[in-house]
Length: 119
Length: 481
Image (cartoon, rainbow over all chains, first blue to last red; front, side):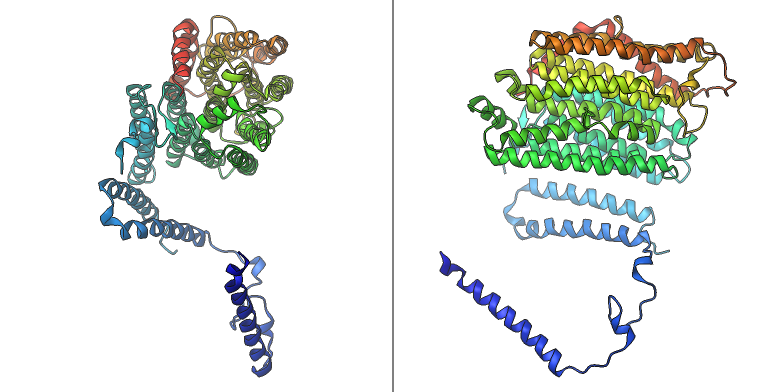
């Protein structure tokens, strides 16, 4: 039973080695030019405009994120359905049609309510 | 795929409600910014359609969806209760929402979503379906509780309900997980069969599982010691929402509890009777004693609804047919009394949303005799005065408990009813005997008045024909698989 896990151990070892190797290369060979921007939290080379804790995000980000999640989940259902579509009966087609119909009604509602307008 | 396993008749009522939610949302969307009437009318039509479907499919469903839902008379009976409450709050609501400048079309769709969840709670014969229904119901209620974003108390109510409610749901889910761990299924038939066959019903994970299930459900019923949220939430939420919340979800929680505990209780007597005994006694006593001293009518009604949850627990504890049918009858009358009382409370509120003082009722008996008379019907019904529906509800549930041998608990319940006379009658004393405090007049709102009148009529009517309604309730209980 234990030997089944040998590949896993090998994978862990090689992952550790690879990571250590890449870090070593960066530490020993990389150039070091320190400046204040790099020391900031969420450093990505661009100066942060506000201290992140005080920053207010417009609620639109969340609404868009929610909409995204809904359609993301829709895809999760649609892909397997599309792959085996030919083997499935009419019931599956009607079910998915209802599912998409409900989602489309939701999308229509969101668009009409002006959720996607970036004011 | 075998279509016969998906008998849509079993979930016809919640299906109509689900489609209705979409319809109401779209109608509201298309009817312009200022006009909410189309949404209200659409919602009323949806409720009526659902009620018609419910009556047409009464006890014709049977178990379907791989044993997950049962469209029996029990589900139909409860669906009718939920739909009646929804109809009343949708009919009465607009005046209140207009007054507070919170008349959004989402009110109607949220009420309908919530009722759809309740319908699944009443129809579920699988713990997970009951859980799903409970969550659907609760999520809509969390939003409804915070429906007045400008008022801090409404936000507070919403947040409190959300935090405590989701915590309680966590208990419920964990209880389901433990039950599953013990019997390898979330099916209620397997659950009862296991309990009937097991030597020790609390063996393994079962004891902890059932205890956690009980916590999750009794939280929604607002049973002491899980009631602390209810006065704050009922008080802070917009009053139309309080009317809805104190009536329908409580009925739904009892429907779920009966689904889970009735069959095992009937076959072997409840192994957890001692827990329920203590819960019932505590709930009645704490609810009534706390209600005695409330200056706000909303808080008083909240504590009174806690006390009523205690009386209702007697029916579950009794575990016989009369107990279960008694609960159905009790709830059918209780929802009308509570919705009516809450609605009158906001109609006569003359000091602004922040203060629901009992003094608002001063002189109501002379200024608006009909409204005062109806409020008296609700108060007398909640006490349980004989010709009214409340009396027969209590009578059936208490009789069932005596038959099952819980004489002392019934003595406690009757003493508690006597205590409750004080605070219910106080409202009437204020209405008919207190001096005028120069308050401004109560608005005349025909639709809301009609809703209150319908409540009062139902309380009187159910008191006139209790026998035949009880027969329907008995048949409903007997139709449970």
